[in-house]
Image (cartoon, rainbow, N blue to C red; front, side):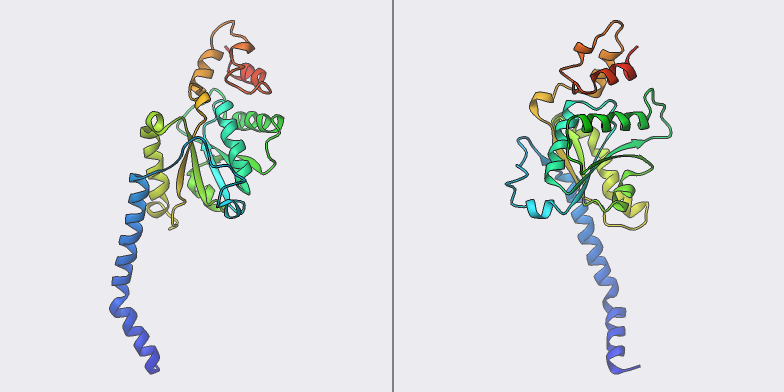
Length: 232
């Protein structure tokens, strides 16, 4: 073994654990910081054609996860904005095996695709149904940012915190060992803050409810489909 090889071996042996400890502490501090100080894109959103990071953004793949049960005007506005800003947007509908759904994830995915197609949303948007951890699927797809849509952090932040923790620590604790994709929260347009999928389901389930009851909540292009799927 050469003198150089001996030197490198002794250097790694003597300082390797210290380097590993410093790296661990650094990564831990970054991840704790992400949870303590979440990134929130408040409305009005940065314009996709004037953002200083537009060149960088146009090379990125991002994920927007949600239940879309059903999709509504607030969802559509967020998807269209991300579609203009990024190279590819993957709309993800997660599947929880322990839950029973009146409208299946596949039906919701089809409904979301029809909404996007009929609203002339950019062709760089895909809709995926995912079983298992969404962060694993996002990593396989090469996504660089994990988005969650919220009405506001004050309204939805508490519910979103647990999911943010899972997406942050899941790749490290559950493996395979990946540096987690950063989570960002996209605050909805104020005029849609009163809209929720729960409200739409409740209105749809009322006997003798009509299409006009949903036209201010759901894109007109899919309002009949929503009534058919979620009606009483």
